[in-house]
Each structure stands twice: as structure tokens, then as C-alpha cells.
Image (cartoon, rainbow over all chains, first blue to last red; front, side, top):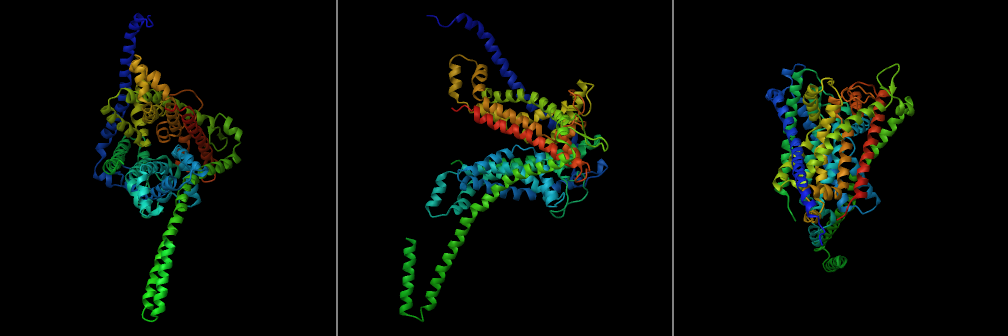
Length: 292
Length: 335
């Protein structure tokens, strides 16, 4: 009984093994290629922009002369934008997550809301811009204000916060809820005093990630008609403003090389902000995450 | 129990009041007041208890309202657009010249063509690289290597698209022009490649999730039969995870279709129906940006045209997303 033809197995072994190691190195090389591109991207931007990056750049308003121009207006605008997006999207997002995880019955409406949220996450950001233009800028007559931009961005990042909060709330073990009910707490008391405190690290992490997406988005704000070039600061939520990505877009669109360098410097400021926010998110996750 | 206790306390008050009318009156009054207060507190808590689900439901309804808002605004404004331009022209005319006052032409095909070119290039770049990274991470990489590479990929996914646009215009395009001298400053190739780089981490990460969820017993079975790691990856893991992998590709393509800033910065603004990749193009998203930036007055045909284009874009990406969901549901292998 000789079921295996040893000769042919041995003959094919060599080519199979070489195919194996060849593909291993190809896969590795392609993965490294992606990382290499990230490196090149960062190197290009830092080598181009660092020359323009100084205190004066951070404190100056935009200007037609590249050597006088700065990101001050855009930086302040980004902070104003965050001041709208953070409370609005967190309240709506966490509220939705609590409803879906703690209250919602397993019926058609709940199912519809869930399907709807996952589809909303796939809608291109520019379409949210069209929604904001019609509803906030025109119908509510908010114009190209901080509020209109903030509300549009809040809707855009809402799915991210909802999903993150849902996961955080779901990870709170049922024993905690049962223990709370057991000592006579009502449902709302249990949610506010037991579930939310336990879920807050996950919610905050998701919230910061969503916020960092909001401050990097450009397309919806362009569609709203936000000014790309603005030499004054917003004083109320109804004032117009510009933000970092718009300022970068404005500089990138100009033919002069000096403005490209300014754009690179602006990108560095934006990336540093994003890195700080993401580090805070990682820190919160590592420090407060409890495993039950 | 509770009601019995209440009765008892009333009873005590009654007896007390009966025996010593004047002196104990104030005392009994305060006990009654305490009971009243307690009741009030309870009912106040009861109100929160009853109202909160509805308030939270309203929060949940916002996301539904957003979808309804998107669909309704797109439909209404698109109808207004179709008052000025016939549906037939929109879908069949071969030219998109919205800014010409005398003989403007609104045929969506050139814009769709621009989007298609960029998307196909992006897919050609992103699918092989994304899959290779996914296979490497899930099948070959050691645990420390994976722990370093995955976060870096996530960083790549978190970079704002305007940064990629800047990169495409100021780095990729000049390099490509060295290689292909006939390449114009604005072209389809450079934004296509950069969008491909942008969606690679997404495809890699989602595919890797699908592949890691294939149970190890299957790998071990194949290895025990004498397969090499490559054969395990291609013949066992890939087929088992195929639903998740295809879904990740479809989602990546949907992102590429909706991508705006990279094409707006590096793609140009010349909608055309040619097959050539080296010339300037315009995608659906880039057109919306161009009009929003200019000062097309509210209520003009050009103003409404961005909604018609947005509607087309929305339908494209919605179909892709629904397709991805259908694939994951329909072809999922349960272990």
C-alpha cells in the first residue's frame, strides 16, 4: 500500500517552499511599503513646513504676504468649532447609546435605528455638507457661523460616538446592574450612578477620536461656504470663522511655493493637535480601562 | 409592605391627635409634612424615571432625522434642478458645462467618469497592498511586530484628507511627472494613487479582523496535512474569511467614491469622458466643492446642480454600503 507518491511530493516540495518564503517576503515588503509612505509623508511635510513654524506663525492672522501669514484665526476657529461639536455630539451620542443599550426593546423601530446609524456612518462627508447648507445655513438662517459648522460636524461624527459609547456600555457587566437594582436603585439611578461611571473611559476615548475627526474634516465646511480666508476672530457662536483644514486648503490651492510651505506648517500644527488628542485618548483607555 | 407602613403611620398620627389635640398638633403636622415631602420626592424621581426613556429616544431619533433630512433635501433640491434640466439630459448628455450662460450642458456622465477613474486607480493600489498587509499581519507577523504595525496603520487612517491632498499635489504629482513627462499638473493618476494609500489601512485592518476570526483549528488542520503557511493563507484562511474581505474592499471603494479633498486639490476641474489618465479631470465631489467655493447665487441652476450631483453620489455610496452589509450577512461562514 503506497498511497502517497513520495517522489512527486519531494519533487514539488522545493517549489512550494520557495513560493512560501517568496510570498512571505512580498507580503512583508508591501506592508513595509505602506509604513514607508507614512514616513515619507511626514518627512516631506516637516521638512517643508518647519522653517515657517514659529511663534509668529501661531500668532498672526492670514495675510497676502507669506512671511506675515499665520494660523491664529484658524487655530481659534478650530477651538470654537470643538466647543460646539463636543457637547452637542456627546449629549446626542451618549443619549442614543444609553437608549439603544438600556431601554430599547428588540423591535422594528430599534432595528431601524441601528441599521440607520450604520448607514449614516458610510455617507460621504460632503453630503453632510449639503444637509448643513440646506438646514442650518439656509433654513435656520445661521449663515456661515460657528454654530452652523459645529452642528453639521456634530451630525457627521455622531455615528462614531454612538458606536463607541454602545460598546463601552455593553462592556459593563450585568452583575453591576443587578447589584444596583438589588439594593433598591431605580433604572435611571443605576444608569447614572453605576453604568455611566463604569463606561466613561470608553465613551471619552470614542468622543476624543470623533472630535479629532471633526477638526480634520474639510469638505463639509467648504460646502457650507465657510470662508477660506478670514482676518478676524469669532466673538459669538453666530460669527463666521475659518478652521485649520480650510486655511491649509486655501494655501495649498495657491500656485506660489511659499504658500505651499505655509500649508505644510499649518499641517504640522493640525497633526500636533491630532497627536495630542489621540494620546489623551490612548492614555484614558490605558489608565481607566477596567476588565471585569 | 409599603402601603401597610403608610397606614400604620397614619394610624399613629390619628391616635396621637385624638389624645392630645393642641400640644401635639405641630408635631403631627411636621410628620405629615415629612410624609408629603417624601411622597413628592418619590414622584419627582418617578417623573425622571418615566421621562428619561423618551428624552433618550429623542436623542436616538436625531440620527434617524439626519438620514431623513439628507434624503429629503437631496430629493427636493434635485427636483428643483430637474425643473430647469431634463432628466434625460442629466443622464445621457455627454458634456458637463454648467458655467456656460448660453449653451450650458448638464450631463452627469463626465463627472461619473472622473470618479470612476480615480476609484479604479485607488482600488488597483489599495486592494493588493491592503490584502498583503492583512495576510502578513494575521498569518506571518509575530505578536510584537503586529503590536507595532497595527497602530501605525491606524495613524495612517486618521490623517485628515486635506493632508493627503497636499501630499498628492506637492509630492506625488511632481514624482509622477518625472516618470511620465506628458502628465498634466492636475490629473487622475496622482489623486487615484493617494486615495488608494488612504483606503489601504481600512482594507488591511478590516480584512485582518476577518482573517483573525478564522479559528486556529482550521490552520492547524491544514498545517498537519503538510501545507506551507502560504497555502494555509491562500487556500484555507482566505476562503473562510472571504465575506469580511470583500465587504472591506467594497467599503474602501465606497470611501474612495466619496473622497473629496484629495481630488479637489490634485484632480483638476475639467470634466471629460476620455479614457486618458494623465489629463485633468473632475469628480462628482470636486464639482460640488468648486461650486460651493465660487459664488453661484442661491436659486440658480448651478446651485441646484450640486444637489443633483450629491444625490447621485449618495446613491452610489449607499448602494456600495448596502452591498457590503449584504455580503457580510449572506456569505458569512459561522464557526
